[in-house]
Amino acid sequence: MVFRVVQCCSCGLVQVTGAVKVFKCKRCGRSNQVSKSKVFFRHVNPLRARDACAWIKQEKEL
Image (cartoon, rainbow, N blue to C red; front, side):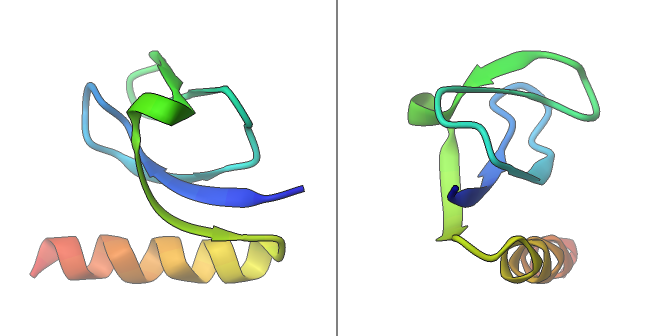
């Protein structure tokens, strides 16, 4: 299984998902296609994906 750090097309939330085709945003609840969303990072280790997600969110705040 590959975990991805993706961005919601509607609200811009950056989150980790294990979805292959469609993921549901944790903030706005909208379903997004992985292929149409911005994918920042991919990894088989969920902890690495989580750390990358936290780093990306921190960088976006600056």
